[in-house]
Amino acid sequence: MAAIIELRNATRIYHKGETVIHPLDNITLTIEAGDFVALMGPSGSGKTTLLNMLGGLDTPTSGEVRVCEQDLAQLSPRQLARWRADHVAYVFQAYNLLPVLTAYQNVELPLTLLRLTRAERRQHVETALKIVGLEDRMKHRPDELSGGEEQRVAIARALACDPQLLLADEPTGDLDAHSAQEVMDLLVSLNKEYGKTVIVVTHDPKVAKMARRQLHLEKGVLMKDFANGDHAPVDA
Amino acid sequence: MRLLMHNLLRRPLRTSLTVFGVGVALFLLCFLEAVVEAFNTGVNMSDASRLVIQHKESLSFNLPTSYKSLIEQTEGVKRVAGGVWFGGLSQEQLPGGDKREEFFANLAMDLENYFLMYPEIKVPEEQGRELMSDRNGCVLGAKLAARLKKKLGDRIVLRSTIWGQPSGPLWEFNVRAIYTSDSPTFDQTLMFFHLKRFDEGRMFAKGTVGIYIVSISDPARAQEIASAIDKRFQNSPFETRTMSEKAFNLKFVSMVGNFKLLFRSIGSAVVLTMLLVSANTMMMSARERTREMGILKALGFTDGHIFRLLIGEALVICGLGALLGAGGAFLAANVLHLNPKPDFFPIFYLPTRSLLLALGIAALTGFLSGLVPALAGMRLKATEALRSV
Image 1 (cartoon, chains in turn blue, green):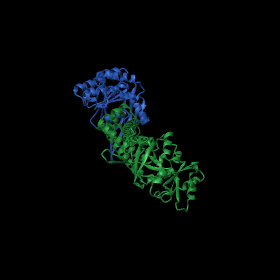
Image 2: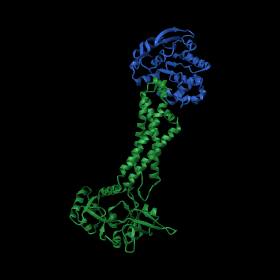
Image 3: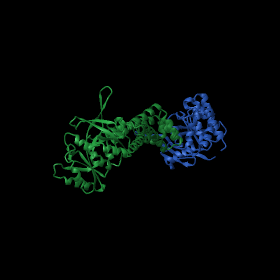
Image 4: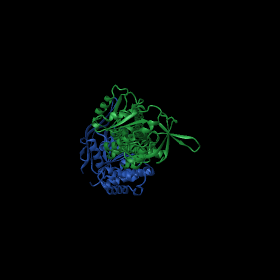
């Protein structure tokens, strides 16, 4: 299976006054296409920083980050934005849907960046909403949906552009147990049935066990890296 | 575009109030521009082929009527018409016995020559003949006739604040002609009557005129001809000052004071206020959406998208304000022909250049008010924006 993510000695340093903070310290890592990875660790361990780096929202102070066969350091901010639209999708803890748009419009939003006709966009949106089981709620605004439904719309938005890589930052953090299970089942099925590479940041061991591989960070250092084997590997 | 419109409708009251604020400011700006234009009516009526001669010292002093033939002899002069400002108030008898007085510009003129010098003035041939054959005849502008509700054959009584007759201050005239003009800038609220009749009737300053209007054959020689006229009357008891019609009218306007500076200062303050109102709205609107900008960036929207989104919102707000304010002013002044003071502003309209100026200011205000939040949004780091509440 080909590597979709390759980090070599990736380090991120912040300066806060005279204090130097290392949210990520010399991370070397490979993730294969079609994998399902849980990223764990206490608060401040660098999970979100790593996730942002994989999505091109943050850049390493030193080291190399290659995602989808692209060295992200070689891209200008404009190219990086375009690359993100084509290859990566985010699912956030707080859903982050735009409150003024309907579910349909929220899912359609990233598609407006691609050269698609209105009919093609409609097809993509309807398919994505069908996958998450919300085809009958497409005209509802976020404030008319439950938390679980909002997160499923966010997942549909992530799916709409058919990205290779799905980055989820504590996607079940704000949900009740039932909704959290639904969302995780959805992510697992996206990985198994559609071959998406999924990386989930989580504090929840139950969620982490649903992944195929677990990475544990502490103070920016990769402490543990092991396979779960809870669900069958995906044929890439 | 859809997101832009949704964002504008996110706080409908705030957006509406901002649009209304911008609209009111632009309406006021356009109104002030129309007032400035109204003051310039005489200047706009000016023609380079006409000169005006007045007494060298002041308009308060008259010139002898004998100068007319001497001026006519000057090389390059085609025609000369003498005139006197009459300053009369029309008197209307009201049913209850009271009298209503109305002010408008009225002048005693050498009508025959005057009309030949002003092809802009259109008088039907028959009416022209009637006017010339009646020594008590007068001609009214069409707008003035409509305002005074006068028609051909009616009598009009003027009470002069300057000139009296042996019989008293009241002068009676017969409306023999009503003029129109094909020029939108020509004043159609004037009244003219025969200089000869006026000179015979008045009790003092007989044989003099206030000004001479001169038409010349070559506008390029205006300065040369003006100098030649003034030179002819140098060291005489009535020395002259000859100037272009435009310079004369500008001088006349300047007697009111530097109103242009005053009005433009008010206009500038209005525009500045409008900018602050719009900028305040945009800053608040952008600040509320910091997290959303982070989301857009995470989805793949570029900094340029964010910049255009915020600038676009500001431009739409100011554009709608322009539609409301400048469009409203255009509708009121140019379509419905509303005039706040018809006796003071004979011509009141919003010039196209002022309308374009207002639209330009609206566009610039939109751009400037959106610039700071747009630049901030553009520079915003997605990771920081996503952390904001």
